[in-house]
Length: 412
Ligand code: PGA
Ligand code: ZN
Image 1 (cartoon, protein in one colour):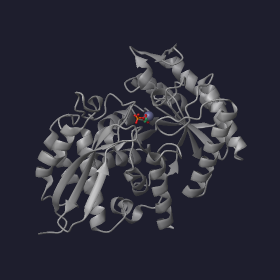
Image 2 (cartoon, rainbow, N blue to C red; image 1 turned 180 degrees about the vertical axis):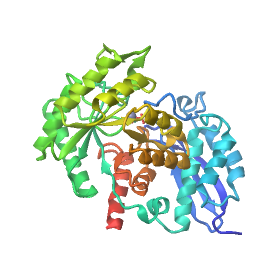
Image 3 (cartoon, rainbow, N blue to C red; image 1 turned 60 degrees about the horizontal axis):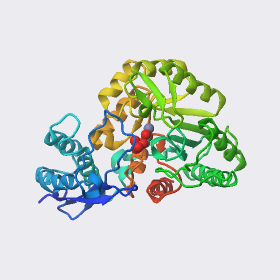
Image 4 (cartoon, helix red, strand yellow; image 1 turned 90 degrees about the vertical axis):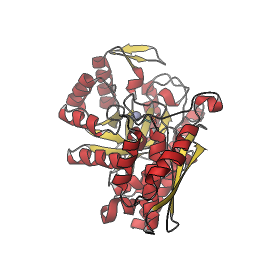
């Protein structure tokens, strides 16, 4: 029997970083090579994402994934055993067809993605290659610049901050390692500043601090203070926001739930513009909502020539939605989350489409993560240039940074 043929597929119910069940899959080849992958899970999920299937009922408060695991062990295994693991596209097309729905709701994108990624990993292991090399070939050379989360709000923290993520970018660092060090020093300095202010230094889902502060602007101000106190300038370190404003959008209006502030699309755009004028912000994600295309167009017209405008809930790693965005000139970058679409092949396709059209691609974790480090390799494989994978805190986040440190060493 050919050695690179899939011999077995096994599914597991494991835990993510929030202690919720998630799907893991292991693919084994005839030569004995194995690949193992774990699906992540979002909290502020976009309405156009592929479906994350949960069992409902009593177990784990309804969040169990036994049905997904059964599907992996049953019909998915049955279908992909005997396929050649080197043909990722064929495996993923099979999974999409087997599911048969528009949004992968029958088998669950969480089941499908775990298998899709495990298949890629076993292929890399078969060749005894690191994953980034298998996926990117000799062209995989660039370490991404991190967008490192240091303060959490919105759906990721139980504080009074409405903006979901405040991130720092080591803008002038020469290496990944140096940039990570700078940002980590700033993270710890921010912790000290918050402690001195008498604020909590408890962290949110992505490891950033989650204090109550008098305003969202104040959050940016303490971050700028931390940058300076740690010995850096705002020329060296820039700021990125994930507004995650789809969470605020209802009936054509935005309601910032924690501060109970109401804004129209135009007012929100003016607010974002004002923030980018006042502070060293170079990237804004989901500044306006996932189905507010009109506001996206305006925001892009207003700020697109000087600020990176990242579509997360807007594009949901989906080629069709990105095509529409490109046509309508909405945003200039896409956030890439594998589980928003559910297979590796579709993810590679959307990144190619973005890169061909001058859109930047930011490879991203989810707020619910695990020890799986696929996205670190993916960022290098695609020379994406940017990765968003949380704070230098919580092993689910540092696992990706640590993987990138190893890759940087290998490449040098
Ligand atoms: P999520 O958040 O994983 O909870 O969706 C991440 C993001 O919005 O970028
Ligand atoms: Zn987002």
